[in-house]
Length: 473
Image (tube, rainbow, N blue to C red; front, side, top):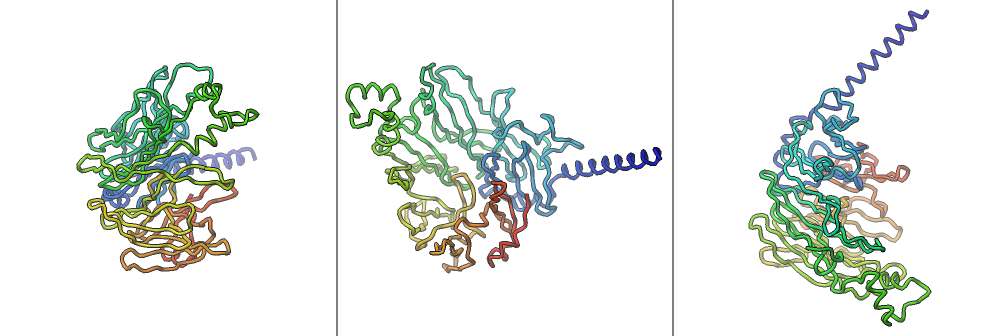
């Protein structure tokens, strides 16, 4: 009886070992040749790099790159399965020896396939750098293209805090670098919180040459001041990089500066029973800081950075009538026939106006007026959102009185409108990319409190048959 039980247990153990071996092999298989081929001519497009923060994904024709459970992963749309970007046989992906693994959520960003290679930016604690590296689709042969020194935490210096959104276009990797200024020791450490800055950086993927579109201030100054403006991506193509520069004409006082002015009789109207400095920041300063903007266009071919437009940002009022923030005048949607497609942004109007901008002549042309509705941009947390589906269809929604929306699209070629289906105002299927025959999107799971990636045939989407969407991961 004991021998029989031992044979059964031995058989189960052998089966488990075989199953484990099969799973390990399956999870480490390389991307199919067709996938590599389909991506080899994608260098003319903008490829968004996936990030572990905010559930973002990088979609290619045959699969999706993403970061999850501190591992770089790829979902194969043909095989309908995920695997790690690790080429080591029988790797358990449990330690630093695994090429797919990283330690913390923010250690890796910008994971994407661009051309024939996979790229990402990874924190290297040993060298105290952030490294832009390339590797084969299998995860093998990682090679560092460019290293960003983090710096030392000493007074009077800038330290690299992290990397923002990453985009690949025109043979370059474009991303924002976020710095923190280390000031002299102070009693009130909150004074250091605003001493930050952002630099826009592009790295040539062939020779590793860096192009910075702005510079760090020589010393710590208030963020969004004249000498330390905020920079963000607005649009990227294979030819141009469009960034916004935002600053305030009136610089915010530090707590010590405000207290000195307050003691001398300034700001007398502030209630002494409330924190006067808090009232100054949240109320007076918001109304008087004079928020400005400038759109800057970088030509990848000429290397020139020129001004596209400048002006004053508009206030966004909250439900209590107080200023909740300020916003830029446009959202850049995509390119069409070499021109920039953008929409006017006005939070006080339910209507949306769409324009085409000829960069060479600075000529603007009205394309579309959406009455009581808005465009449906691709679901990216980043500021760059190419949103023409199938290269010519502009998705938009019309608001209904029953808290629903009508999903429609405008064909840029035929100039015709097509109504597709009715949906919730929250938008059930939020697109993140497409292949030749499928749309890839996320459907929010309110129980898990996170988005779940789905895939749907384009024809099923046009019919509004969202139940046909297939869950991927």
